[in-house]
Image 1: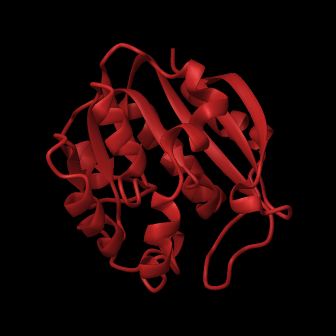
Image 2: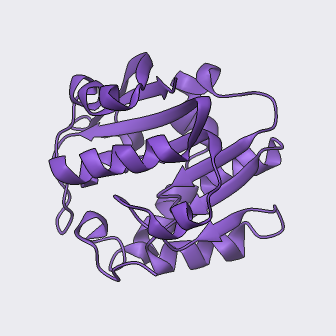
Length: 202
Protein backbone atom coordinates (compact mmCIF):
# COMPACT_ATOMS: atom_id res chain seq x y z
CA UNK A 1 0.00 0.00 0.00
CA UNK A 2 1.11 3.55 -0.65
CA UNK A 3 0.59 6.80 1.21
CA UNK A 4 -3.21 7.27 1.10
CA UNK A 5 -2.83 10.97 0.20
CA UNK A 6 0.47 11.47 -1.63
CA UNK A 7 1.00 15.05 -2.76
CA UNK A 8 1.31 14.00 -6.39
CA UNK A 9 -2.29 12.72 -6.46
CA UNK A 10 -3.81 15.62 -4.51
CA UNK A 11 -7.33 16.46 -5.66
CA UNK A 12 -8.08 13.28 -7.59
CA UNK A 13 -9.97 11.37 -4.90
CA UNK A 14 -12.28 14.29 -4.11
CA UNK A 15 -13.13 14.86 -7.78
CA UNK A 16 -13.16 11.24 -8.99
CA UNK A 17 -16.91 11.19 -9.61
CA UNK A 18 -16.62 14.07 -12.08
CA UNK A 19 -13.34 12.89 -13.59
CA UNK A 20 -14.48 9.36 -14.48
CA UNK A 21 -16.94 10.28 -17.27
CA UNK A 22 -14.50 12.93 -18.52
CA UNK A 23 -11.66 10.42 -18.85
CA UNK A 24 -13.87 7.77 -20.40
CA UNK A 25 -15.24 10.20 -22.99
CA UNK A 26 -11.89 10.24 -24.78
CA UNK A 27 -10.60 7.36 -26.88
CA UNK A 28 -7.12 5.89 -26.68
CA UNK A 29 -6.50 7.10 -30.23
CA UNK A 30 -7.54 10.67 -29.40
CA UNK A 31 -5.07 10.81 -26.53
CA UNK A 32 -2.13 8.92 -28.05
CA UNK A 33 -2.64 9.39 -31.79
CA UNK A 34 0.30 11.77 -32.26
CA UNK A 35 2.78 9.18 -30.98
CA UNK A 36 1.08 5.84 -31.67
CA UNK A 37 3.64 5.06 -34.35
CA UNK A 38 6.28 4.78 -31.64
CA UNK A 39 4.36 2.14 -29.67
CA UNK A 40 5.05 -1.57 -30.28
CA UNK A 41 2.51 -3.22 -32.56
CA UNK A 42 3.29 -6.82 -31.63
CA UNK A 43 1.87 -8.03 -28.29
CA UNK A 44 4.21 -7.14 -25.45
CA UNK A 45 4.29 -6.30 -21.74
CA UNK A 46 2.92 -2.81 -21.08
CA UNK A 47 2.87 -0.83 -17.84
CA UNK A 48 0.38 2.04 -17.46
CA UNK A 49 1.36 4.21 -14.48
CA UNK A 50 -1.38 6.53 -13.28
CA UNK A 51 -3.85 4.43 -15.24
CA UNK A 52 -6.87 6.32 -13.92
CA UNK A 53 -10.08 4.65 -15.10
CA UNK A 54 -8.20 2.11 -17.20
CA UNK A 55 -9.27 3.59 -20.53
CA UNK A 56 -5.81 3.21 -22.08
CA UNK A 57 -5.05 -0.06 -20.31
CA UNK A 58 -8.25 -1.56 -21.72
CA UNK A 59 -7.47 -0.39 -25.26
CA UNK A 60 -3.99 -1.87 -25.06
CA UNK A 61 -5.31 -5.15 -23.67
CA UNK A 62 -7.77 -5.39 -26.57
CA UNK A 63 -4.80 -5.01 -28.92
CA UNK A 64 -3.32 -8.15 -27.41
CA UNK A 65 -0.82 -6.58 -25.03
CA UNK A 66 -0.28 -7.91 -21.51
CA UNK A 67 -1.11 -4.89 -19.37
CA UNK A 68 -0.30 -3.93 -15.79
CA UNK A 69 -2.17 -0.84 -14.56
CA UNK A 70 -0.90 1.13 -11.56
CA UNK A 71 -3.32 3.62 -9.98
CA UNK A 72 -2.97 5.08 -6.46
CA UNK A 73 -6.41 6.75 -6.32
CA UNK A 74 -8.77 4.13 -4.93
CA UNK A 75 -11.93 5.50 -6.57
CA UNK A 76 -10.42 5.54 -10.05
CA UNK A 77 -8.82 2.12 -9.63
CA UNK A 78 -12.08 0.57 -8.40
CA UNK A 79 -13.95 1.96 -11.40
CA UNK A 80 -11.32 0.64 -13.78
CA UNK A 81 -11.47 -2.83 -12.30
CA UNK A 82 -15.26 -2.87 -12.65
CA UNK A 83 -15.58 -1.21 -16.06
CA UNK A 84 -12.73 -3.00 -17.78
CA UNK A 85 -12.84 -6.40 -16.13
CA UNK A 86 -12.38 -9.54 -18.16
CA UNK A 87 -9.48 -8.16 -20.20
CA UNK A 88 -6.72 -9.71 -18.13
CA UNK A 89 -5.42 -6.37 -16.82
CA UNK A 90 -3.39 -6.63 -13.61
CA UNK A 91 -4.31 -3.73 -11.31
CA UNK A 92 -1.86 -2.56 -8.63
CA UNK A 93 -2.23 0.04 -5.85
CA UNK A 94 1.13 1.80 -6.01
CA UNK A 95 2.58 5.20 -6.83
CA UNK A 96 5.53 7.25 -7.94
CA UNK A 97 8.24 8.10 -7.33
CA UNK A 98 9.46 4.80 -5.89
CA UNK A 99 6.78 2.28 -6.97
CA UNK A 100 7.72 -0.14 -4.17
CA UNK A 101 4.93 -2.66 -4.75
CA UNK A 102 5.56 -2.89 -8.46
CA UNK A 103 9.33 -3.12 -8.15
CA UNK A 104 9.01 -5.91 -5.57
CA UNK A 105 7.37 -8.00 -8.30
CA UNK A 106 10.64 -7.86 -10.30
CA UNK A 107 8.78 -7.71 -13.63
CA UNK A 108 10.07 -5.56 -16.48
CA UNK A 109 8.22 -4.02 -19.42
CA UNK A 110 8.60 -3.24 -23.11
CA UNK A 111 6.45 -0.09 -22.96
CA UNK A 112 5.68 2.19 -20.02
CA UNK A 113 3.01 4.89 -20.23
CA UNK A 114 2.82 7.96 -18.01
CA UNK A 115 -0.13 9.90 -19.39
CA UNK A 116 -0.73 13.22 -17.59
CA UNK A 117 1.38 12.02 -14.66
CA UNK A 118 4.95 13.34 -14.69
CA UNK A 119 4.11 17.01 -14.08
CA UNK A 120 2.64 16.11 -10.67
CA UNK A 121 6.13 15.29 -9.33
CA UNK A 122 8.62 17.82 -8.01
CA UNK A 123 12.25 17.83 -9.16
CA UNK A 124 13.53 15.33 -6.58
CA UNK A 125 10.55 13.04 -7.11
CA UNK A 126 11.18 13.12 -10.85
CA UNK A 127 14.82 12.11 -10.34
CA UNK A 128 13.78 9.25 -8.06
CA UNK A 129 10.94 8.32 -10.38
CA UNK A 130 13.17 8.16 -13.45
CA UNK A 131 15.48 5.74 -11.64
CA UNK A 132 12.48 3.55 -10.82
CA UNK A 133 11.26 3.65 -14.43
CA UNK A 134 14.69 2.76 -15.79
CA UNK A 135 14.78 -0.28 -13.51
CA UNK A 136 11.38 -1.43 -14.81
CA UNK A 137 12.23 -1.02 -18.50
CA UNK A 138 13.53 -3.88 -20.62
CA UNK A 139 16.58 -3.28 -22.84
CA UNK A 140 15.49 -1.19 -25.82
CA UNK A 141 12.08 -0.57 -24.26
CA UNK A 142 10.20 2.71 -24.55
CA UNK A 143 8.58 5.15 -22.12
CA UNK A 144 5.78 7.50 -23.21
CA UNK A 145 5.13 10.75 -21.34
CA UNK A 146 2.54 13.48 -21.76
CA UNK A 147 3.43 16.77 -20.08
CA UNK A 148 0.70 19.31 -19.35
CA UNK A 149 1.22 23.06 -19.68
CA UNK A 150 -1.33 25.58 -18.46
CA UNK A 151 -3.28 26.72 -15.39
CA UNK A 152 -3.21 24.30 -12.47
CA UNK A 153 -6.69 23.06 -11.49
CA UNK A 154 -7.79 23.97 -7.98
CA UNK A 155 -6.63 21.46 -5.39
CA UNK A 156 -3.99 19.87 -7.63
CA UNK A 157 -0.20 20.03 -7.50
CA UNK A 158 1.57 20.44 -10.85
CA UNK A 159 4.91 21.67 -12.16
CA UNK A 160 5.74 22.90 -15.64
CA UNK A 161 8.12 20.27 -17.04
CA UNK A 162 9.64 20.77 -20.48
CA UNK A 163 10.84 18.12 -22.92
CA UNK A 164 14.38 19.41 -22.37
CA UNK A 165 14.08 18.96 -18.60
CA UNK A 166 12.71 15.46 -19.11
CA UNK A 167 15.67 14.61 -21.36
CA UNK A 168 18.08 15.81 -18.67
CA UNK A 169 16.35 13.62 -16.07
CA UNK A 170 16.49 10.63 -18.41
CA UNK A 171 20.08 10.94 -19.66
CA UNK A 172 21.85 9.51 -16.56
CA UNK A 173 19.92 6.27 -17.12
CA UNK A 174 20.84 5.96 -20.79
CA UNK A 175 17.34 6.95 -21.91
CA UNK A 176 17.20 9.04 -25.09
CA UNK A 177 14.37 10.95 -26.77
CA UNK A 178 12.89 9.30 -29.86
CA UNK A 179 10.28 11.96 -30.51
CA UNK A 180 8.84 15.17 -29.09
CA UNK A 181 5.40 16.31 -30.30
CA UNK A 182 3.44 19.39 -29.21
CA UNK A 183 -0.35 18.95 -29.17
CA UNK A 184 -3.27 21.22 -28.22
CA UNK A 185 -5.39 20.85 -25.12
CA UNK A 186 -8.19 18.30 -24.96
CA UNK A 187 -11.85 19.24 -24.42
CA UNK A 188 -11.28 22.43 -26.43
CA UNK A 189 -9.08 24.02 -23.77
CA UNK A 190 -7.22 26.89 -25.45
CA UNK A 191 -5.23 27.64 -22.29
CA UNK A 192 -3.80 24.10 -22.02
CA UNK A 193 -1.27 22.37 -24.25
CA UNK A 194 0.64 19.10 -24.09
CA UNK A 195 4.11 17.88 -24.94
CA UNK A 196 4.30 14.19 -25.89
CA UNK A 197 7.70 12.56 -25.45
CA UNK A 198 8.82 9.00 -26.16
CA UNK A 199 12.10 7.83 -24.64
CA UNK A 200 14.00 4.68 -25.54
CA UNK A 201 16.21 2.70 -23.22
CA UNK A 202 19.67 1.36 -23.98
